[in-house]
Length: 531
Image (cartoon, rainbow, N blue to C red; front, side, top):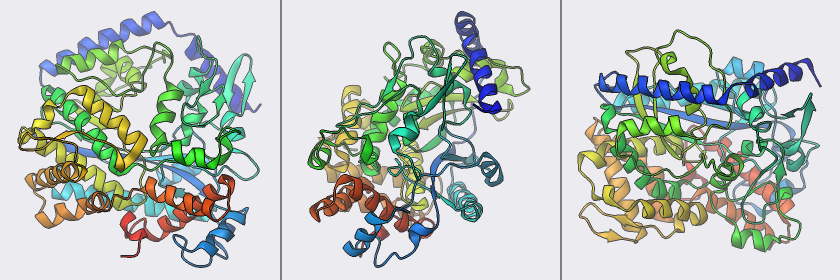
């Protein structure tokens, strides 16, 4: 037990001593403050604004790259070397000082790093600025992390644990300090540690096909990483309409983006065969991890949310959301410190689509939709494609009064979980622009991406620019190939050659990291294939 651990335990105990009833009353009072500001138009903007949260995990850089013969994405002999190489790209903890140097933020695990872009107006220059900022900051981060013997990976789920550890050990390891359970490999995020020590918190398990993992902290959630496009609306009272439309596009966009079909091999149940894992496994296990680890009985905080009837209802839902950890709130000078308890509570309002109300100053106050279903992607170009697609859809669908707005909520929810299970091959339902209900995948993706393109043109992008940003998603829709499908194919090939999951999954992972190295800044997932 280090001094730092002891200090963390003391902070956790302080949180656990917070009066939950007083916390609830303050959140309800803050909700009234926000609703008063909404009536005054404080959260309105003269135009739409976009932003992006982008999460990564770190792997060890070095000897695992040496002696790599052939094409990492297609040479069977290279794969044999990869499987036998104990220095494959393994998960690596990121020193906190290194995060500060590269300007990234902490996330749940010590191996995580998060970038949040500067909000930009939704126009041609704004989209270019988002892309340029991601590239510039990530290039700078690569130089710094490379000098430290590690690399940041853009991927939805890591599968190869640190050297000398199993994934199970890494995720489940914890210590106890004066009755407070501390996850050994979790960052000093007090709210996450407090969740493992609150009333009724006994264990945290992953509910996914053939996976067997239970821990006494929420550390298993650190398996996953995502990208989260933000869309700030011009008029806050329109939040319910944008929220409804974001729920309708969630399933089809996730189907194009799935990227987490495998867990680390040692997390599968002992009696599960490789064929079982391939036959029954889902294409996007990030959703399963987030929902099963962070939901509790009577407090399903990670869900596909219901539609909203009013912007006031959006605020009230956050205030009424079950409180797992009543985090204390200090005084501050930001505008949104006037409703700091509600803002703090919003930090655990983990819906797949969620409205947010905040702002450092009154002039910067904004109401936005955070779109959370999309996993981290193979390249920057793919990630920006999803930001552009979501932003374009939020512009085009309401402007053109697209009839998918009236798609039953239950159908939208079913689309989302169908995409989780089956990816781009999922059975989806949609309403096209002419009001025709369809389950034809080509018609669904064509209508979806055509409206995304139209929305980008509406805000000033040229037809060429709009097409260019969305081309990575058009390619996936046309070929039926997603990153998850690519991973499944790689593992399938290794198994057919006689490997087991313990070899096949690391081999796939190394190929993924090598391909990403070649294309992260100057290519897309489509470039992983011979054209």
